[in-house]
Amino acid sequence: NDQVQDTTVPADCVLATDEVKVVKNNISIYPNPAKNEFFINFPSNTLGKVSVEIYDMSGKLVSSEDKISPDAKKSISTDRLINGTYMVKVKGIGIDAASKVIVKK
Image 1 (spheres, rainbow, N blue to C red):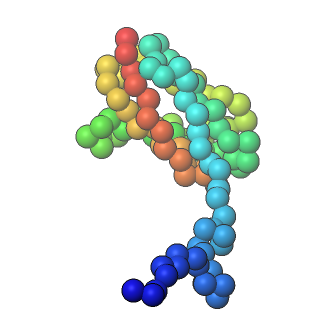
Image 2: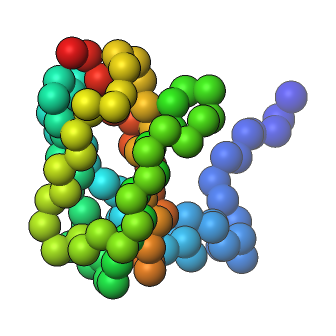
Image 3: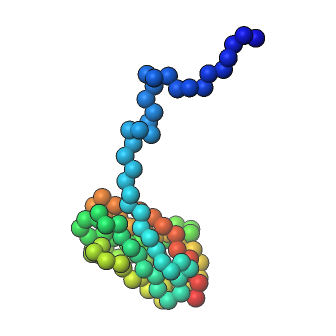
């Protein structure tokens, strides 16, 4: 009954959160929900060409574009997409990001 609980971390323990570097390679998609088209903004540190793949929620590849220059925003048309939620994946040198977009015509 004379013991006191101590929840402090011992000095010889190293927390992994101090050792992990956070890589910001998030893409932003707008407008969301999209009607006729949506835009992808790439991170400022994106190098080289990137590929953009659009998947439906069952995992089926619906659309793919290769060798896109990530210098500015990219416009994607929703003409071939039906109403629903899609996963947009962007891959390239130093970037591997995904984001959801809702198509509502």
